[in-house]
Each structure stands twice: as C-alpha cells, then as structure tokens.
Image (cartoon, rainbow, N blue to C red; front, side, top):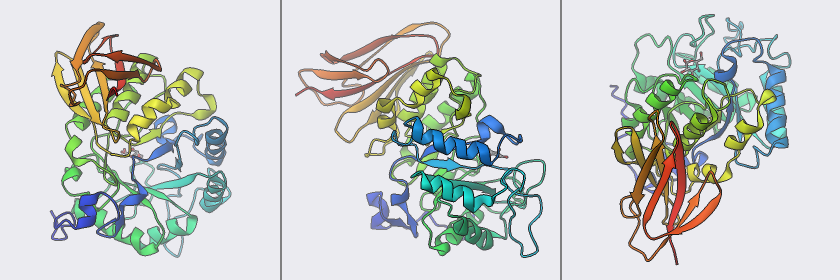
Amino acid sequence: MSDQQPATDLGPDRAAGSGLDHGLDLSLAPTPPMGWNNWNTTNDRPEFNEEMVLATADFFVSSGLRDAGYVYINLDDCWALPERDRHGDLVPDPVRFPHGIAAVADYVHSKGLKFGIYTSAGSHTCSPVGFPGALDHEEQDALLFASYGVDYLKYDNCHNEGRDAVQRYTRMRDALLATGRPIVYSICEWGQNSPWTWARGVGHLWRTTGDIEDTWASMLAIAKQNLALAEYAGPGHWNDPDMLEVGNGGMNDVEYRSHFSLWAVMAAPLLIGSDLRTVTPQTMEILLNTEVIALDQDPLGVQGAPVRSEGGLHVLAKPLADGGRGVALFNETDQAARIVTTAAEVGLPAADGYQVRDLWAHETQKCGGTVEAEVPAHGTAVYRVTAAD
Ligand code: GLA
C-alpha cells in the first residue's frame, strides 16, 4: 500500500455521503451511474465506431431509455491509435472515429446525455493491439479528456508494471480534479487490491471482480462476490460488479431478469452492454422496467444484502428511503422452488399489514407479514414491501 493513503481520516462530508471527499465530488454519482458501454457487445471488433455510438445516443432518446434514467454513453478500449502524436497526445482512431472524439461527445451532449471514455492505469490498455495507457501521462490525458468534453472515465488496470494501485488510481483522480471538469471516475482494477477498503474518496465506483461473461455461471459468481461487499457501498462510492450482459444472447430471459434484479438490489451501476440497434422487445422490457430501476436508484443508496441463503435459495433485502424494503427472492437452483420470508426477517417494523408490490408483475397485494413466491429455476421475484397505513 502507498504512503498516500487517501481513505483514512474521514471528514464530516464523507459521513454525510455527499459533498466533497478528498476533493472528489460525491454528488456526481449520488445514485449508481446508468448508461451504456460498447465492450460487452463489440469487444475490439470494427463495429465499435462512430456510427454505432451516435445511433445508440439516438436510441436512448427515441426508446425512452434516457427518460428512464440512462445517461452515460461510454466508449471502452480501442478508440485510440497505437501511438501517441508528436506532442504525446492520444489520437482517436480515424477509421472508427473519423470526426474525432470531441465531435462524438458534442453529439451525445446535444441529446441531453453524458459521455464517457476509457484508458488504463498502465503503460498500455488491455487490448492485445497495444494501445497507450495513461500511466505517467495522467495529467496530459486527463486534460485531453476534459477538452473532449468527457463526463466519465473508466480507468483499467492492464500493464500496470506492478506499481502501487492506490498511487496509480489516486494520481488520476487528482489529474481529473485538476482539469476543473466534473468527471465521474470509475476504477477498474477488478477487485485485485480490495478497492472497497481504500477507493472511497478516490473514485465514485470500483469494479469488485474480474470481467463478466454472458453466461449464467459468470453472472452468478460475480453476483455472489459483490453481494458480500454491501457495507462498503453508498452515495458517491459504489461497488461495481461489471456491466450488464442483458440481451447479449448467452442467457435466457428468466436469467437476464435475475441479472437485472440482482444488480438493482445491489445498487450496482446499470451500464447496458448490448447492441441497441438490434435489441429485442423482451430485452427492452427488462432494461426499461422503471420499478426495478427505482430500486437500484433509491436515494438512500444502500446496497442490498442477503438475510438468508440456504441451498441456493436466497432472500435479499435492500432498505429504501421511504422506510420500505426491496426484497428479492432468488432461486439459483435448476428447479422451481418456493421461497418464503417475512416482514420481520427483511427488517420491516411490526405492522397490522404490508403492501407488497411485485416489480415484475406490476401488481400490488396486501399481506399480513409473509412474502412468498414460487420462483422458477434461475429466477428472481422482486418486491417493494412497505408497512400499510
Ligand atoms: C478489461 C476490463 C474490461 C474491458 C477490457 C477492454 O478486461 O476489465 O471491462 O474494459 O479490459 O480491453
């Protein structure tokens, strides 16, 4: 660990979960960031280009995604050329981005959206092509990003030369702050250095795991790792279990609803990772479930946690700003199963009755204190439960 320990000595701002924390403006991410990133659908393929990004911004508006809260249009790896220019600046790939990056950012902004970019806290980014990273170029690259109009930086961990993670990520935080432009800062070191123990006040969110894949097994393993870290998340400092795979084809819609539900209960960033030019109505129904989104974006900003897990059947509870609880009944097994919990078990006060809102069926029922469902294999029932008046 470095001698530049940024995450000790908490000030009053930090306790309030808003304002400044070591100069980082927590109010840039009062709730988990929502948007889109190309990586999970394109990887480094040529279809990641200006045309795709602009079409995605258009679709955010026309489909209602923007109005549902999705704001960021984020570029991932492979947007630049393998060599810096003679001034040492990164150069946008002229084939992928013929009008440069600032023009893309301007277009995204003109749609009422925000724009994000990517680089690595290493000599190179993660792509085997060997694109330049920002290690020892932090100030220059941060200024370039600010000049592009960047609102969000994902800062990866490849080719880090074994150098101290806290120092590397803190130096970019300071470089971003020095630009004077408000930029959400996403730390992507895959949980290798337990960022939940030091990254609060360094970045607004931090990856807690390795890369997600579009499989049930990958999504499940990541969800379980991230569920154990609930105590470290809050407004302006989020655990990031990686971007969504919803709609990419490797899981069925029951599994994608579980993926989306679990990310919402965990107050995870909701970064769509599919190609929205070919999205199905079933995928849009998941991504546009405003009641599940509201659970993710609840202003109290508490990450939900398991209250009981037995034999692959899980009861998860997320305290909400209105005093209610988000409740997920999650069945990771291969058979349908009945999952039962109670208002008391999920932390609700004693009351004569409760309102139980099913966030997938969009129906409200009353109950005396028991919340239960027959949950299909790999399925998740999600409720908002409040004490009835
Ligand atoms: C790493 C990150 C991914 C993605 C790729 C790009 O693997 O964890 O999210 O950004 O690099 O090369």
